[in-house]
Length: 443
Image (cartoon, rainbow, N blue to C red; front, side):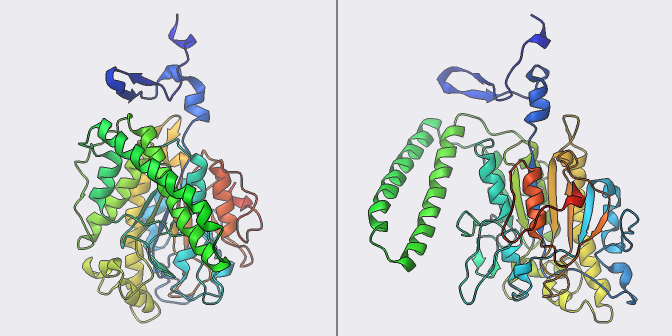
């Protein structure tokens, strides 16, 4: 039998004694299905707080502006994003977009809805599901982990000052991880416990959750309208745990991928921002490279100026002030250059991440070709909720067309971009919140 006539499924495992199994690498005999139709599609969203340098046209510091000058394919990158020049064919700048629901919100509140587009009415805070979690649900059990949610501050923060970009089905915040070593151990570490013990614990957890959910049906019938909402949010959290237990059981006998951690600074923290930010990006790269997950979010800093751990990053890096103060000083003498240099620093970290994706071969392209990276903020200048600084990179083989500065009218909602991204991921989406269609210029 020739090797060409034998087709092997890409999910084939080598099975040994005691139920031990190993996943196979991508082999030629896995055929076109493995190299084309089953190619992973991924998305990553990276957020920075308080906007960016957006000078007036007559400003002496206009060369530090975040958004490029010019239009279309003839745009010119300013000093702050000059490092992205090698990626012109892999990225698009999206000028003019913002959330319609965000324009009426307080300037500090909008990070919460960057990926949701939700509307907060009156004094009642209630978010909706974020696009990363819609994608994660669509991908199902294709990967060991449904998503990777990270932020510098970690946890969920507080309402309208959230420390996570990810929100579940009912709008409940998903806690973000902020300790690199814990993330690494979860995704790639070797568990010292025996598989038998782990399976027993997972089975016990599953039984308890089943009992809880069964009893909840009786309790729910006795609750009033206001309590029902709170109870349903609680049940949604329980179901999330149930799904994680279920997923862990299915992946228990499949070894975690081995990766080289030599250059990772897993013990870095907020006191060493350069190592910390790079390591967070590296963890996303490794998670995508090993197909451990296909969805990732990273919030570099939240919008709580008083308590955000990331607030001191520019100061520690030698830019003089904390993030909030830098952002407030953008239109003062010398303030534009100071904020522009912080923008430049962040762009350099993004460029390094994009380069790792671009130089890693995958099939007939590279990781960046099959990965969409949304990068930006939910303010233009400090607390201005219009015309967010946004760029979309990668996804050239997912149907995106790059190489242009797009100037969208103010009546086009940012949720149109969300719809466009979901459809490129293979998640059929006609509308999302207040969307009016796709951004057809991108596809």
